Image (cartoon, rainbow, N blue to C red; front, side):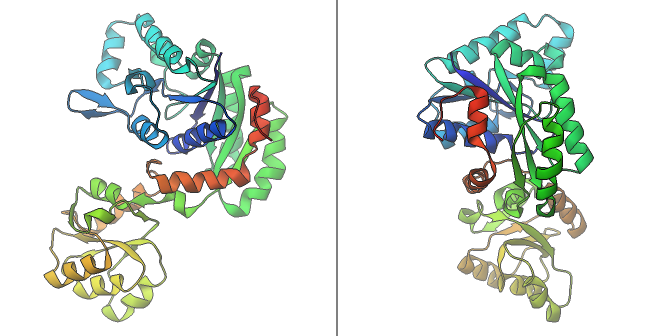
Length: 360
């Protein structure tokens, strides 16, 4: 029977998708076959006449999974599905759909990695909350807790243990400020360990993992790409605003690397200064198009220009609020996260807890 590992989290944007990929790679490196499944999707997007879960699509492509998407994601808990459940509370057909999909994914494999939803609350409406789903699928839960503050981390870990009981195999604490790594390792880890909550990894916060792609910025800003469309998969780590004088712009922009610069389309002096430094893209506000000279220079230097109808303050609000909330759908971020896990994750201890025969 395949070992089932249920990767779940207490918050959105915690790194579940990247951790799921890393676990599958770890299993494969140890000579084990592994499948992927998201039992319940609440973040689906409509595509033509059907729903699509972007996490599953990315993992299927990144890992070359051969299982069909309808088995990898058997249930989309959309508004329409929710209304149907409220009108017809019998959820036995839904349960059977999930069980059959898990059986199909697990067939002939050593392990299945399940990716949970956006919190431990999901699924109660259809009687498939994490504790019950763990029981039905005989899954062991690995809970990811992103660091917000010390009290929250401890409370989330202990609450997860209470909710999940013996099915919880352990936890990962993600995105910890570097100056707190030792404290978490020396104080928090043994404290929760005494309550049967093993911590297999304390992962430091890295700016590269909080980055967003230029393409994601275009979507969030409802923008138009004026040039260098082929560079829109590059990652942006910081945001800088060009609202100063031309004389001080260059020294200001030199302080930031891998950045997006927001300024008005009528500020060619700021745009030129930004392109003299490590700028990944220009965001021009107010729907003001730059001169052909600026576009030509941007094309020469491979710097995409995004034109948005929003004013500068609104554009700043949108972009600033988006950092750290993008999904791990870029291979560069996944690769970076896996390198962090090689240093900070005790895979051997996790393998023993799961009863898997893995390489030391």
